[in-house]
Amino acid sequence: MADYAVVSVFLFGAVAVVGLLFLVQWFISPKHPAPTKLSPYECGEVPIGDAQVRFNFRFYIYAILFVLFEVEAIFFFPWANAFRDLYKIMHWPAFWEMVIFLVILFIGWLYAYQKGVLKWQ
Image 1 (cartoon, one colour):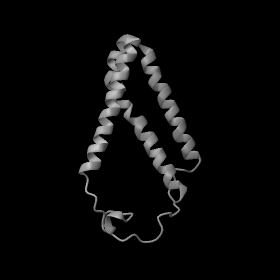
Image 2 (image 1 turned 180 degrees about the vertical axis):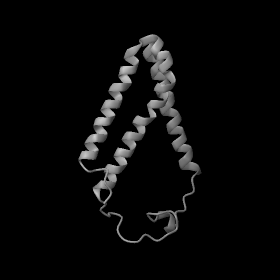
Image 3 (image 1 turned 90 degrees about the horizontal axis):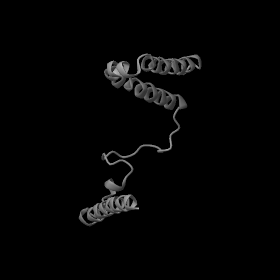
Image 4 (image 1 turned 135 degrees about the horizontal axis):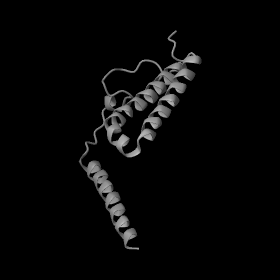
């Protein structure tokens, strides 16, 4: 039961700090909004056209694929750094785990390539 009390104190403290910061920000922030400040863009440029422009869905697919493969590529570096120590502990399973990871990554790339997602038109 004492563990829950510690967690409750930390949770209450976190909520109190966040609430206090919001309250302080509300008191010290300037309250004189200008028309430029209230416009959709804060860069001083007048917006042209409607903000609800339809984009081609391929741009979203490119972005998702980029994030997907970039995040998966990030996993290579810690694995490569830790492989020597992993090999001492786990031997071949550490290697085969990365092989399985690469096979899944390759299947995803192959699927995207076959669907024609990676072709610029």
